[in-house]
Length: 353
Image (tube, rainbow, N blue to C red; front, side):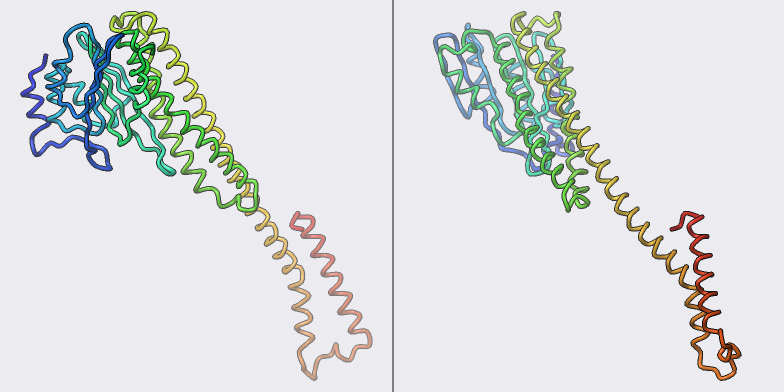
């Protein structure tokens, strides 16, 4: 085990503060559930040191830390459960890539938990530590994602009470992964709404919404894709902390991650296609506008020489010999008509008309 003095010097000095949630440190709540097939004990607002007394006997202990713990609290958990300092560092420094790490008699799983707040994806993190007779989970968000699991544990006939802690680990991972499906449902509704707007009168004004939607889908993709490799590591044959039957259940989590990734890719492609349609609409509108301006310019050029001629003969000068010609008016009109036909033929030949 690493020296915790080095860990304390690295994370508890005033000059080195850990990377925390941009919204600020979240107050933590620590809850404990100790259970067997026949009995269950639940404690709240318990310290890491007090959790140690439950780690004896044949019972299983699940400790959940809700909120962003301070480095001093993480050091207490490291000492109480013999957690590796590098693993504790991953819990403190939020935004870690989803991964699975195996230490001596322990396995650590870090999963990103994308949460949609308004139109933005907020990245939260769940860290899970599985030992021989304990499971410690950390979630830095404000809402506890495992409340339903805690209620299910109180039912004596639930499968979790009949199985080892590795099955509880599977249940928690499954809850985290399934958290992405409601977010994708919101994206689906938003894409459908934008698609209707795109083909409507206000279609030209939807570019900003489409761009922001594609950006959030990219953030979601960056959080979900690494989960596939993290789950695959848990399914490896050399992972002795998980029973063979539990690894079969992990395949279900793996399939869910693949579905999430497929949906994200489909939505990103749909958004990209909608952006292309939007740009085509903008280009078409610009082309039509330019075409109208071009034709208007050609017609102005066609009538410019005729206007010039009529302007000359509209001048009120006495000494203009053409004014006394018997066929002067007919000659000028014929010349103007011929010039107009000649210019029209020239513009038509150049495909300007």
